[in-house]
Length: 369
Ligand code: G6P
Image 1 (tube, protein in one colour):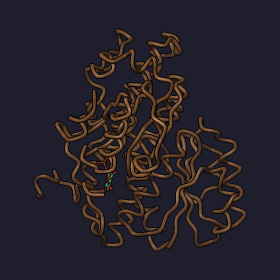
Image 2 (cartoon, protein in one colour):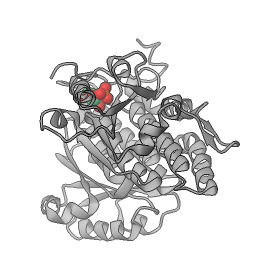
Image 3 (cartoon, helix red, strand yellow):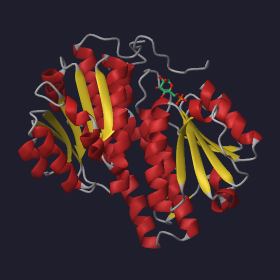
Image 4 (cartoon, helix red, strand yellow):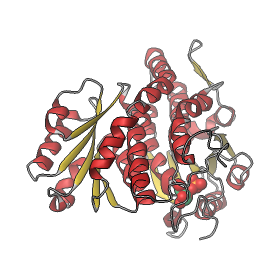
């Protein structure tokens, strides 16, 4: 097992560090930057289904559901296709309206999640076209869907999902871009800008990983907190949910993710000097509004950990700690802002002496209801 961990203390840490390669493995061969082209067999062969779809319904569980939420922002922004994101376990039991011209995208790392499988079967029975985004090659979901795209993240052993999440977002971004080009909703130069930026992401993830030691310091400062709040807006709202989930899963500290502006409708009541608040405040995502949310937290003595763009000034002035990530297109920021949140939860769990790779009560793949 030590050999399999490749010199890392835990699979989770190894998998966090594998993300630059995993992301480039995901787009390799699919994204042809010089030719200004995206080639994905599962989409190309079924392009009419996607173009005729009045909406896309995404079904998934857990971290994959969070990737689906990021995809909702990306599909609507880039490809201008309406998207609904559903917990598979809710969708399967609530008599959903499914039409023949719906495209259902099922996201699953393992490809074996029982609720996601049941949602797929229901969609198929109702005549929808079902597309799978799986990591495990040959898994049940990859076989049962009409078509699909693998994430090519490589095996993920840590129960808390890391590289599966960022590679799911990568595949979904490729799909959104492919459709946007076909629909003509992005100009050639906008399309090319996205490809060039996506190609830079692995290097930028490496840069984000360089904050590891600093994040360890932040972790040591807040590891004994009883509650955490995670806030983000737009593309980074689902990242806030995912950051909170990571902390809960492996450190057993209660954490909630919220859209930053919703804070005033509830969570603000919890803020006091004992409450660390992780705020994703990158420059391109409603920055000024998030800065004013930070002011509100500060005036209630909450502790602020800002996830910011390199060179940030305004959040740094107000926060207790900032963790920088490189600049990129707004739609691609989740691929970077996720990284420090993974490392923060990892270090807190290690410091609290928890079983990082196999947290209590959780399974890597939930094949029963
Ligand atoms: C379990 C795992 C999570 C995962 C979820 C969905 O709860 O512990 O990490 O996100 O299942 O799994 P899937 O394989 O369908 O992505």
